[in-house]
Length: 82
Image: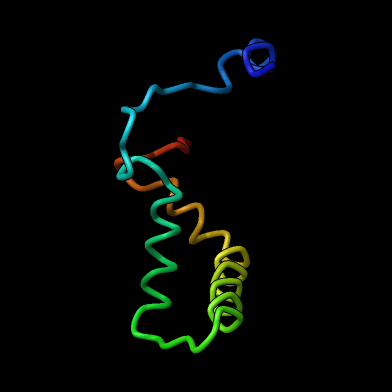
């Protein structure tokens, strides 16, 4: 299915093979890092309060599209090109 889709988009999508374990090349690791920085040094007395804090941070990130696009523009990753 993916190969068929790629054939329909010649020249528009470039695939890169990544090493099996390469967190520094994975944009989602930057998201996790952002979440960890936002939640560090906070005390959560129950799972519900932790869950709310995580969801608040995720919502914050979702609302800031510039920040998310920066995760993909990091020099080591650079998925987006102009």
